[in-house]
Length: 132
Image (cartoon, rainbow, N blue to C red):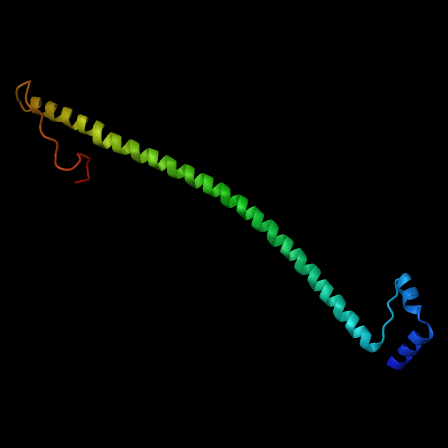
């Protein structure tokens, strides 16, 4: 418990610290014990910080993989939507108009018009119901 006693032991037996360390014994005075405990605490905190950083890096790598998969799927979805939109426009702009014109000819025949009656003009807009 006394700093002077500890200093005397170290002076009288210079190899005592090495011998104690060889036997896995840590010799300490009251003041050096505080420094040793502070060092142990800091080492413990550094170890846990290092472990936490490794966990963060692993989770970041996993997130990156998930994000890359999401990007691929999102781009594929966009391509499918573009194809669907193009198909819709094709149907709306060509097939719908043709069917509308054929219906107009049938309607003209039904109303008693001549067999070779001119087609009714397509309504204003693009001919798609609900759009002007």
